[in-house]
Image 1 (cartoon, rainbow, N blue to C red):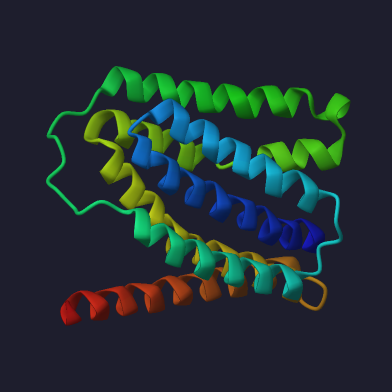
Image 2: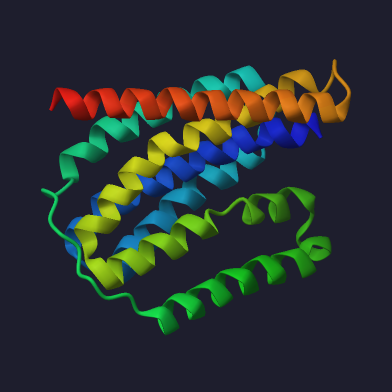
Length: 204
């Protein structure tokens, strides 16, 4: 279980690259091109990382470096904010959610044939981000989707904090104690990020 948590840190590195590629490609205004670029970038990073050892501290350091780099580069490609369109295409949103669920189901059923390493990597694919970004891109435009992806870079930090705490505490604490402690670390990280974001907003 500690190894799974450590592996999640490396999966999150690929997720950050996925979001960065989407931000850059969204300048094309094409949702298909943006998603293809993001998926290709994720594959280029996730598949090699899945074959490497997963020391948790190294994973946390790589995640932090990747997050900072992608955040700095990504903000250069963000358009100025504008009011989003008021409509939401609910039928398309439901269809995207069903498609995401099917992807997870197919990978789960094929896990035996794919092998644990590849199946685990595919299950770590950012399905949630994909559904949200495609929905926003189609309903409210590329700019809104890009800004959401950029914000998601920082939001993933709380999940990384949870994974790191879990990987470090599971070998020395009972499972439930480790889980609760890791959850508290994640909540504390989220609170700190929220306070920092509010402070930046007041300074603008």
